[in-house]
Image 1 (tube, rainbow, N blue to C red):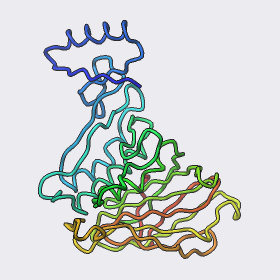
Image 2 (cartoon, one colour; image 1 turned 180 degrees about the vertical axis):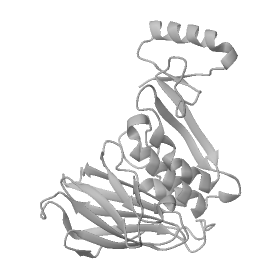
Image 3 (tube, one colour; image 1 turned 90 degrees about the horizontal axis):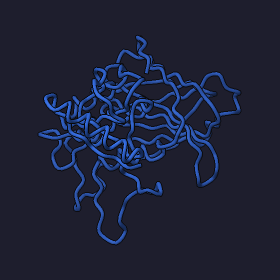
Length: 287
């Protein structure tokens, strides 16, 4: 897909339309991106996409995980070209920055119907970008992106969060077919941005009991004891994901979300609807 940015100033909208019409007439396959934000209100000029990029604090980018929940489902999609945590929260690649970005990425994944977002972490053939010929030091943000490598082309499932910590938690669920074994998997990702541990129950409803194999399910957690922890060439594995087998009972999963963490649950599946329930007295929030 060929993309072309057209910068629009309000005082130059007439010129923008002239450029837009001329380009579309000569090169109809080119997708034109306006730099005006169409996520909060309808654009008043033609465009195929609108540019959305954000550089901000960790807490603000986490809160933007719900930014597109109310965006119009009609009209141009958002082209998320850039995002990052900056300033004091960022350090040289802190876990705090990565955690906020994880919440933002889950929001993009949940609102893919209004997002034109390609996982820039992947090569054009879908494989992770990495070099094996030089010493490697992967930042916490790198590890966050690894949680999303199967998102492109995956099926998104509706999730419901039932907990009194809903403002500090965001979740998504996808399923995809693995090219390695041709099997279909379910992945549930949850960011707990709060400072408290959250106990949850994940139920896979509306299924034949044999359609989801909970045995062999895994839990992967990215967290750190210090929010400003960073990886370095001296300590390249200071902040890395840890994986363990998931304990299950019947069709339910009882799990604990550590404070300030990104957690994914991976199960072999066919189809599902998912409910995530807190063990605390809960208020309901649709995810």
